[in-house]
Length: 77
Image (cartoon, rainbow, N blue to C red):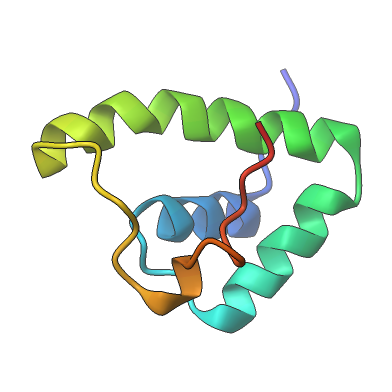
C-alpha cells in the first residue's frame, strides 16, 4: 500500500471537521484537482467519514462555516 501524505490527510481531516481555513481549502482543492488518483483518495476519505460525522453530529448537518458555502464546497462526487 502506498504511504499516505500526512499534510494532505490533515487538510482532509480539517475539511471534514469543518475547520479548514480558506487557504487550506485552496490548497486542498489544488491537490484534488491535480490528479484523478488524488480525487479518488479524497472521495474515499469523504465517503468513509460521512456516516461517522452524521452519527457524531446527530444529523447530516449542512456545513457551518462560510468557507463551506455552496460555491466553495469540495464536492467531487
